[in-house]
Length: 106
Image 1 (cartoon, rainbow, N blue to C red):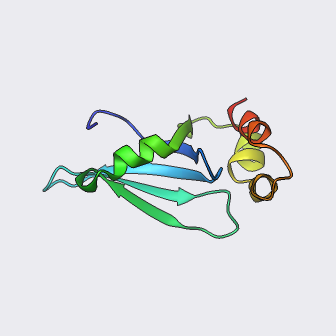
Image 2: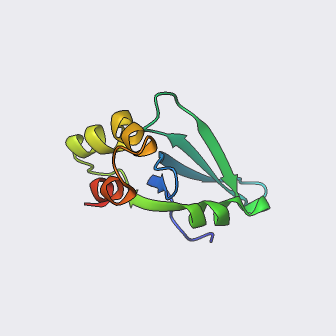
């Protein structure tokens, strides 16, 4: 777990919420902590997951990696990663789960 690099964009497999994730390690305890900031919601939320209480394992179970954020094309960043309309259409059932995730992973 300590060697796994988790920085980048991740999507919640159930809700479709995209998070930008960055990790840090507490220099005193050695505990890894993930900071996840929502990207495709009309409001911003921050979440924290850490090794100490099994939060990172839960994170890995419920989220799927999209990209690391380096060299992300502007169109993909704007029209997919930060697209609140796309997320809203998925949440309200206007597009199916397969169509939503096809936009993210293709």
